[in-house]
Image 1 (cartoon, rainbow, N blue to C red):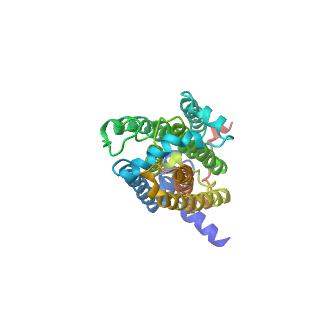
Image 2: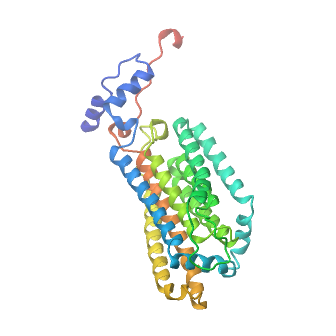
Image 3: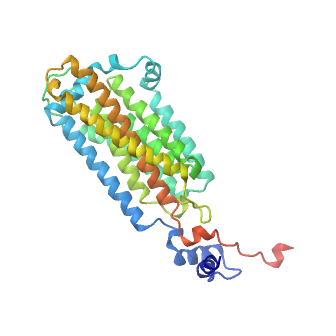
Length: 341
């Protein structure tokens, strides 16, 4: 108790009665900068991880477009994936393959996110939301028109560049914003929802032969990278209020499981791809099932890994445990005698 009382006095001792709320906020920021921004190490971590995801998207594009094996893998999955979809998934895939699926999903998630942001007074987050959605809506068109796609194999698919998938990017962006907009108790649940929606959208655009597998993987990596960089710009209005910050068992468990399971799934999918490499150039029958399974496993693994990292980084930037965060919110200035009467 003595240590807590010393912390209280050291942090709040400079606040005088009758001080305006703005001055109190300024004094608290000077006493403890973690009340208005995340730790510098957390912001640097968000930027580094975001850049790594963006670099990974470039590597995926290079392997899928600039190499013969990559084009053969994409073509094998693109040609026969519809026949490999399990019967119990067909109705769900049919819903997401509709041209209205992406606008409806993005619209619903965006409205929920905006309502929560306004109700929780996260004003800075509105700008982050608009920028992320705008980038994910504009980037696919720019990259599709600017990135080359050499014709290395004979394919029934269009030879024009189709990477990245705009439907997948905008769906992932909406899921990321929902994850960032909800209170701490709902972050883990929203991360799982975001994984499910982004995964189904990615499978659906390949099932409908709108995109190749590398397009959806690239789209997911770009969106997660941009969302991580967005978290580095978190400010006071986007953070949990002092006094309410605490560790979250659900965030710790779900993010750990998603990151671990996603990594294992990614490694397994890459192993399967390596195993079927000899049969790609012949479109061998025995390689088809491996190609389909590896695509679904890699897509699901990357979705779990990406949103698991976003879940952990969101809590890291929203709730740094500072002195004031442990003590609680400062007392409100007392009302004057005239107001009390």
